[in-house]
Image (cartoon, rainbow, N blue to C red; front, side):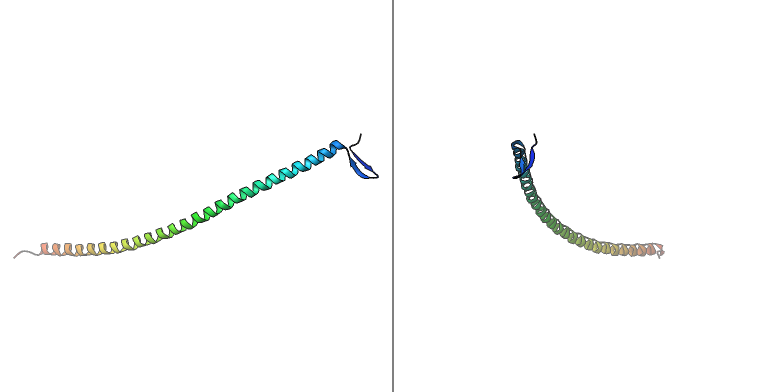
Length: 108
């Protein structure tokens, strides 16, 4: 018994083969529909995650800029302090040299 026949009326299918094909097509349609729905849901979640990451990146960049400004201000302050300490050291060296010269001069 053949399941597919070619007759005057066209191609005819056996009833069991027709039901198998119909169920296969319905099943394939359901599977494709479920896959598309899942992908849409995942795409929405990914889009939300990307937006959150963009916000976090913007916040991080703002913090980085603020920290850079603070570090530069501290560097400038420390450079000024180093200069002041250098001047104090120079003054102390001059005083030390004068004291040594005074100690070398004989008392009269």
